Image 1 (spheres, rainbow, N blue to C red):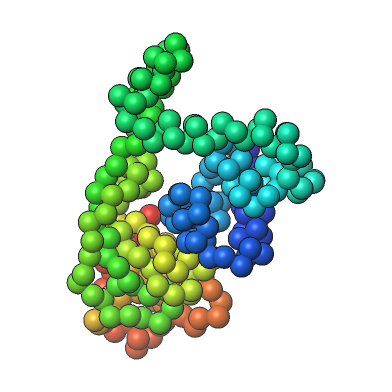
Image 2: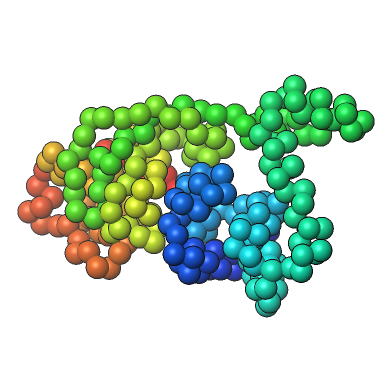
Length: 247
């Protein structure tokens, strides 16, 4: 999809979620997709493939072309048209999630070649990562708990260089990072001006955007939500950089 479609999709998806009265987490559960996937669509870092766009459009009863910003009419297709466009989406999703042996049986039954088996294996490849639950606040600092979980994630959703995940609590990094979202962190003491990182302030930890001088000294930590004041001066006395957030 082109850049125009990506921007249109992001704007319309956010409007639909807001007007639905449901949380992104609830919508993700209804659609059978991960909350982190919806988060990346909301901020525009990724765009789902067209069968997924059709599924989302059907969920909100809108036109898939409108959802992509390619058509002015938001109305859902007429029943016959909708059936023609969308009936196969659940089959595609089920096939992609099935193990290799099941895919081979399906293709044998239909007397067709096994298509993109290696690609489907890559899509299904999972990686187990450490995720810290609520040790970093994106609003008021929370106590940095040592508790963590080892959770499976699709390997292609984990950025290269990620050492662990952190589940964010609070709204001060919105709209860049949503409360409840898992961010991926590369463990390093080095961070550059304008980058987002995880920082320890004494025994508290926060997710903030750093302002860094040329001599590498951090002068303040900022929120992307303008409602929150920056952390600076004496409050940075016990500052330690845990790592850089990968987007």
